[in-house]
Amino acid sequence: MFSRACEYGIKATIFIAMQSKDARRVSLKDIASASNAPEAFTAKILQILVKANVIDSVRGAAGGFEIDAAKLSTLKLSQIVSAIDGDEIYKGCGLGLEACSETQPCPVHYKFAKIRNDLRLMLETTTILELAEGTSKGETYLKRDQML
Amino acid sequence: MFSRACEYGIKATIFIAMQSKDARRVSLKDIASASNAPEAFTAKILQILVKANVIDSVRGAAGGFEIDAAKLSTLKLSQIVSAIDGDEIYKGCGLGLEACSETQPCPVHYKFAKIRNDLRLMLETTTILELAEGTSKGETYLKRDQML
DNA sequence: TCTATTTCGGATAGTTTTATCCGATTTAAA
DNA sequence: TTTAAATCGGATAAAACTATCCGAAATAGA
Image 1: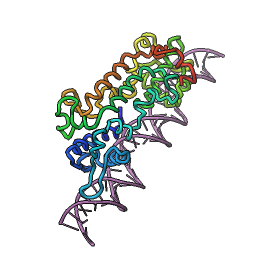
Image 2 (image 1 turned 90 degrees about the horizontal axis):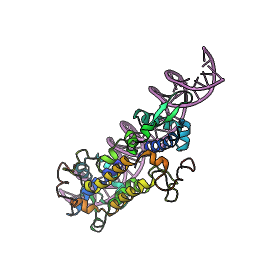
Image 3 (image 1 turned 30 degrees about the vertical axis):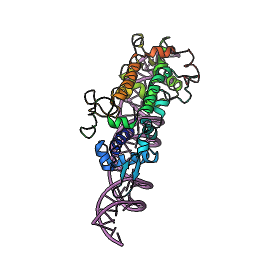
Image 4 (image 1 turned 180 degrees about the horizontal axis):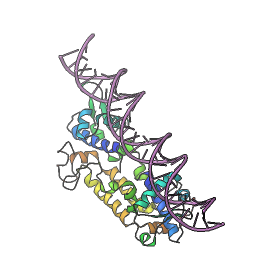
């Protein structure tokens, strides 16, 4: 569904949010290990997210990554996905056709329209904070095996 | 959403179905031009679909590709996607985690569950025949600009 | 039987994505 | 001021995906 880079980015951002909630700044090393992702590759993804103003970084000793309070309260899943994968996934045509539209639909257009729209809606309404707090169901899923 | 190969595969299969409905066998050349896809690459994808028993092929002069009547009447979109991209897209975890499940959900599990399920359901219930017949809305979308 | 047409299959490029390495830069603290 | 700990940024390598080429095999029809 998403690229691996995007998956790493989502996991990383959720982890940073969990820590930022308690005003803890986290290092690349901690993020990579928490999300079971290669460190150097995670660094590249974090840089994308910093430039997209999704997360914040502080250089130098005692530096690291965090999300400021104002941002954290409104940050949506869609911002991460758009920054890393773009929005082709939930806005593009199911068959990758440039010319496909409502007035000139491709064969699968109406079959995909609802699903892509549901996906878009979900990404745009799901906050990182709710994911970091684990309010979807129980409370447990972020604790074991470095977030899985 | 899907790989380019999968998009080509879907377009190709719909085109073959359109012709097979009227008992016309079609050549690689016709398929590639109708779906605006590179010929040699399309050949590779068609071979995957033949091996997966999604479509049929006949070698030699006057040969080509077709879908036999029995197959055509039951062929689902999911069979093409599974053959080319696998079913990771609509069965896998949103964060690509091996261990994610109902009993051990990842942070985005419940957020993605419905969407992935809707996607799976759509792919498993949409027949190629209905796409080839253009019953989703009007009748026009497969006719112009080599199927778009 | 011969020829033209067509799919099949292996080899090979090119491009994008994923991943690693390492030096430069920044900054807190000794 | 020096040092250690971090992020930043460019270069590079590895893997996966996309794409092309060409000869082999099959087959209908002349």
